[in-house]
Length: 259
Ligand code: MN
Image (cartoon, rainbow, N blue to C red; front, side):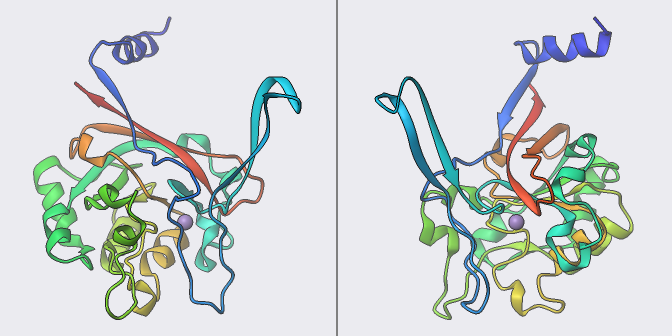
């Protein structure tokens, strides 16, 4: 066997690499984004049993499911956003672009104090002062602690007295830096979308979607278990379904870490 493949497999089989599941469960309670009523709404996840070792199929169990493309832990393709309309749909992204080094940006403490916190260039510069320049092809992951709220829909949405969701996100300036001065695959978050809860009121609206997808980059949302990743040194693998002409897809996202 090739040496690189052999050492990778030895690492995974108890030889110093851990495989972390960064994926939240899909079920009828999986939180989905709710848009103002004038816009089309996404269905949540619904599982429907076809047969389960019974008269409908004595030897087998299987289900069908309905869901929007942007449900649960999922990948946003560049073509998800109007600015990326000429860029890749989920089936046309080269599979090597689903794999990249994890750059984990620590934000938990400030998100506890301020749920509207944004990941800014200051966070990225702080990360780079410790670990060096954000590597090409990285997934930049905002570790906000929000994944801990996933099973509590109200806490996850965090509606304020104004009725608006107060949820952290990626700033316009950080998206500009990551697309203009660095060469990342995209960003990942623990929240329902890569933009902050209030980002519909920003200029431009939803600046991370606008800039990241306009530059042909991707998004990962509703990630889990980011607390198990080191700030640097992991490999993140995010695999969406190959939906032809799809704008995104639920994904199984995993990471390899040393230890
Ligand atoms: Mn999405």
